[in-house]
Length: 541
Ligand code: G3H
Image 1: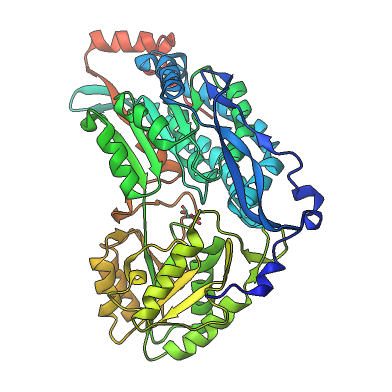
Image 2: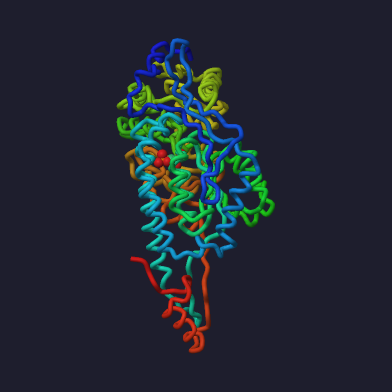
């Protein structure tokens, strides 16, 4: 894993950066959003360094992007109190507001957000090294997610606007908010995955405190202003800083009703246990995964090699849905690896704004060292790096490494690498990868590559009770966002999708009465004179 001198030329000097992607001034963020206003922080800041290094006279140096506030428990609890105040035990303006009006606030927000695309996309590239097309996709997908959520809510509201009569009981069943939601997204999708919980939580009438992930922080700053202009005070609040200092007090206050967290199960467990009344806490969690790709003897090898490369290396393999281990039939493993390594070696490495670039600097501190350790462990136990320059590192850049043959007992067999290292295990019997998936701690998705309907059907039936999505002849992925996204075991809690998320952040609540003339007269009067926003047959068009 030697530093490769060809890498040096991939890092730009300042003058090589195209003007539209340049960070002209460093961003010293001192504001955070609390109770509808951009509060100013005068305390210490956390410096933000990009994973992108610049070639300077003094060698390679990390580009400093700016800094964000390191708030304390005090500011964090103020933000929480603002959210509690806006919720006001369900009596607040926001939870009591009609669905139609909540939707209007969101349309206003989406309108403002669209104008911020260039700024957010530029920061996605600089803060986490996301390639330009992926960064644009993340932004656009988030805007689509907002619109799709609003449409889905209208559908839900239409269904709930009718009365039901069952066994002599009249009832109207709607979904009501749960309270105060803490939203925390991951660094690999800092915008999209924060918003896939924040948006449904808010639109269902909850109030929110959110904390941006450790990396991908500054890109949220332009959105704070949009939040403060589009929503009533206290409905959205944002805290910044060290998790232990700002998140711990939120959880131990007991005032968080829903924890929406995408990250590691270790942190999720800590957060859950900090809540003094865990039975009150609802959790929506997206956690680790080690999705397997299984290449059967009759697979179309060109297709399998292409999808496995895409699945294991899009955004450098930093996706929870990435293929993180490949099981390949021994009968075709040599031909598969030849095609696969060729595809991997053709992927372009460079800076996020360069056309066609797929491999970019890794943002997590110490990441290349960790990945190198995984490779060394496998090599010390009999595996090899079999592609050209695989595992070569220079600072934050790493050439993808295809490691073969990987077997039980190696760290790469079980650890979620979340980076550009692809372990490949040969198998003789399709039962072997099934056993791996069955015994694994994770249970998100799997991909099967093959052409025999009988064998594929058998594998589907064995795997659907182990994971939550079985992909045939394609990589694992979350989208389309209308499909359910979840996992078993250590991989997730709760299901997200455009429509499922509306359900996750709300509770079915009903008004019921015996069907007699006395009650009918009361209900008729409430509905006809629109006295209640809950008990109402109005519906949205
Ligand atoms: O990191 C996990 C993401 O939810 C994966 O989404 O499959 O669309 O990249 P994706």
